[in-house]
Amino acid sequence: MVSNLSKLHYTENGLVIANLGEEITTFRRVRKILTLPATSAPATIYLLARPHQGYKRPLYIKINGHHTKTIQPKPRKSMGWYELSIDHSLVKAGDNTFDLWCDATAMSGWSIGIEAGHQKPRSYVSDNAGIDWRNGDMGYLNAIRGEYVIRIRLSEGSDPVPPAMVFEDKSSPRLESLRRIIPEAALSARTPIDKARALSSWLAASWEHTGGNQASQYAPWDAETIIDWGKKRSGHAGQRPVAMCVHYGVAFVSSCQALGIPARCTVFADKPNGTAGHFTSEFWSGEHSKWIMIDPNIDALFWLDGVPLSVSEVQSESPNLANLVEFGPGHQVQLGTPHVKKWIDEGYLEGISFRNRAAWYRADLLTRPDLSPPGHGAIAYCEVGLVWDQRVASDWGMFPYFGNQSYFDACPQWA
Image 1 (cartoon, rainbow, N blue to C red):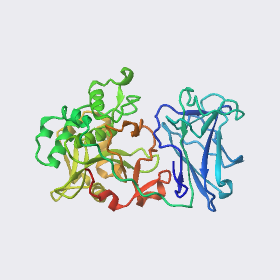
Image 2: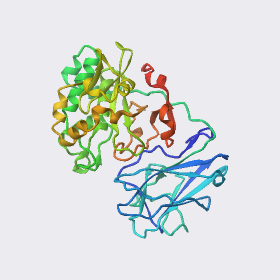
Image 3: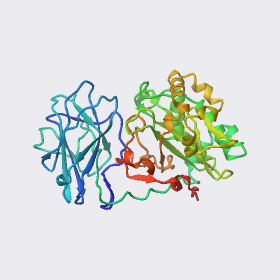
Image 4: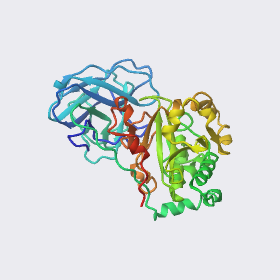
């Protein structure tokens, strides 16, 4: 999946389903094989995992048959990143085997993230303490085939150039179908910024922000489905869907493109495994020759001296955003949701939610649903489709792509 010139080595894309992982016990062990070059410096292992509530025993790891330091549990409601520095002598050129287990005998010790959909994974599970291994019938229900989210960063090599933004095909029938439900206020608006404001207000008023504390079925990144399920509060298997900040941003990005405006998804985090992250959108304004950040979750746009702000400008103006924000009519609808109001009051306008930024480089969400994550925001960020600001690269070593300011500011190429 990655070349030997890369620093980060992995065999999955972090497309993890929030409530479908692999359970680890003393009997049920997992194995990951990564092909690596030789290294002459300490390396860092990153794994996406979660200890069960109340479980206080460590996670054990062997690399090529050698024990490493154990990983101690940290209380978490969802899966998050654990990292472990290892000596270079544990790594060899060629195939490297990573085995993980814990002391629990029931499935109440540790869980590890798994990405389903692989035909020939280099991840394996054992039910008899490592005597026999299989790379099928995996996950805690023995029902999927996938790759465990275990990555390693070496000192040798370099991070790859971040990928260019990818937009929808303008002739896609999906865009035409989406246009049919976009309100007239957005269709008839004269400028891109007026269209974007109308879309933001429409989406913010379309459904109640629904997070993982209220629902467990994650809505797919499909704009028409998000709007339909969100309004009805009913989706897959008749259950209420998770339709949160992520989904407002996704629906906005696709709707903008349906109106001929380049747009992309923007992701924020306070820190790895942080709980103050957020998901918004950006659209391109030819009038201002820049990307403009908009928040269709709470219908917010930021201005300074009559000019709408980009992501980097919003970050620069933090924590004084209360004087710069302009709310649209959809904001009042969202204030009716207590947890949204609490979130705004307790840090949103102080910029806590905007500390570290990343761009989701694929905006063709309607026509390439297979590349969209099935649980973003429900667990710690883990998708390799995120391009992080290179200024925070040292904190986000579990990701492969980092962009400079020129990358984020570049005029979109949308034929």
